Length: 349
Image (cartoon, rainbow, N blue to C red; front, side):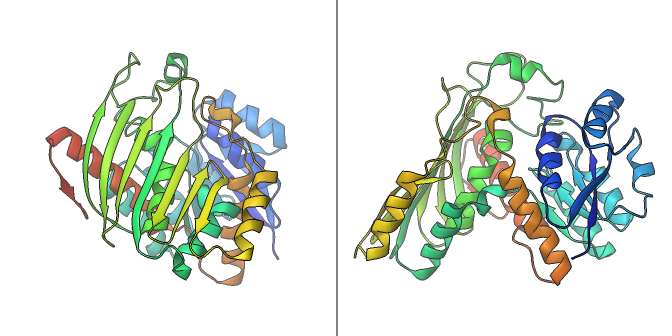
């Protein structure tokens, strides 16, 4: 396997997860970083002994650069992603892919036209529990899927929102508890349950000051397969609870709490079901990120990036391309539209 040279554009907090993941890749190596904040760029560059740039266009000229990770604020993903694609680099974009569908489509189109790969970071799909649930749904063991629910009852302090001028703004955060904190769970929910057909929602800003966006949201969903569901997303619940997804059918129910399966019940109960319950009872991860975004491990970033470069190397599909990454953004935008207009909203938008 060749060694793929990685660059990072944007050196805020999320770049720490990307750089740590890249450092552990088989066949990947960080070669350069770029940020308009030269102090941040130097911090990351010095840690990995790589070059830093204040202008990403200069970095993109490097011949040893194969893959670029976009770690700018959410509403500033399009321009560097498009520039990287036009420079012939494969592109990884931190969630969300972008904050409007038009901008998502611009990134997808640029990568298509330049014949480079696009990876949208939705790394919750890569856990052992998530993959087990997905395969079990596809096997039909749930019977008729009836309910798919996601609960993201997290806590963020006012200091968190005050820590960056872009946080909590429509222009650069693109939304609040849904677009920033809940989007991984929303992606996972639609990955399990299939496309969303319609939403009816309420959102509000209840406890935080100096933010434009929601810190509480509740949405009712109807999926294309006929199942119903609920999304609850918030950054107001002290002390911050573990993210939970529950998938139910007339033959089974599974509950995922963060990365762990805490309920696994099927009719009939097979011998391997007891083994699955025992396995996850013994290996509880304890979660992370419910109250402190820095408490999240970079391991799932590593798994997704490894999947991406392996796919490039082998000429095979990777799990989350741009069109997959667009789906959760569309669901969230539909929820915002429903809340703002006070009505049920059909998808696609």
